[in-house]
Amino acid sequence: MEANKNAPKVDYEFQDICLQMEEYFGKKKLIWALPHRVGYTNALMRYALKECQQRKIKNLGYFVAIIRNKIK
Image: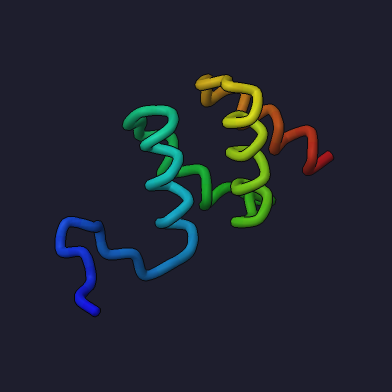
């Protein structure tokens, strides 16, 4: 099978998460900085994105608040 040539190349899981976040929240510079913050794991970011999608909230601040509450 041939890979989709239009799909962006992803080497790490955090890149995939960030691309999904860009698709949902829109292109924001903060998105690509989040995986480098202390405590922001791939699993936690996926959880927060899923919560935002289920609640239909497209506010990146809400996404960050979900993670901060989980880290505490």
